[in-house]
Length: 270
View 1 (cartoon, helix red, strand yellow):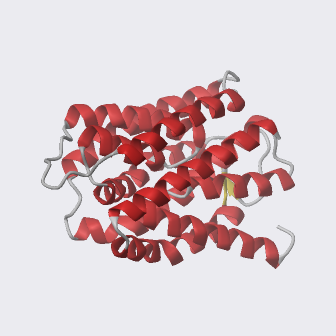
View 2 (cartoon, helix red, strand yellow):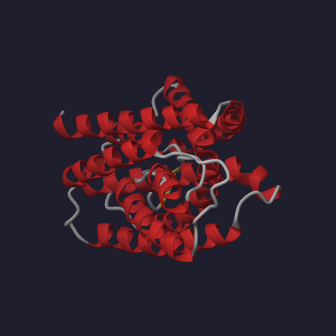
């Protein structure tokens, strides 16, 4: 990096991503991916290496967002470990397979995936807004729905570099009848489990263009400032989520989906 301004920008992006993670339970990948892409391009990274460096460092940032955001909930035992295990185990398997397929060939075309991803996001947008949290209605989550949600989440996470929360939360609400607050808390606890195998895999891989001071695809000079920002604000996001009503969080989450769609479409057409 050239200046202190770059470090400030990375820390700031981490702060924004951390706050969003705590507020919505989505991991913050939407913030991390573009900022990492920007700095990696400045370093001359391109083509398949650019995708892999971006995914690797986004996943590492997401791990810290998830851990910092779910420690209190895990201590309070407010997370259902049966749900966590079924979703996480299925997601880890599918994300590793997806990651291996991306790295082992040139079949992956980001633009095509982005269009499919946008269609899926639009679907989750309407599902989120139309979901009614009926008072007293029992949760429907079981191991079958957990595995289905995990497989879908793992594939989307592996292809996009996002933590998977933006897909998990609407699925938890629709298939499991969880409230958006419970869905967000469960999502945030699962995100680090999904991301960790990816980080290990990328750290042990050898890029075509090796960046000084990196471990495999992990560029420490980029990811450490982001992590500092993440751990500084994730609990502030959690505090905000406790104050807001479920309806308010649902509206914010829907707006977040729309921003994701806009950003993804612009990255294709520009």
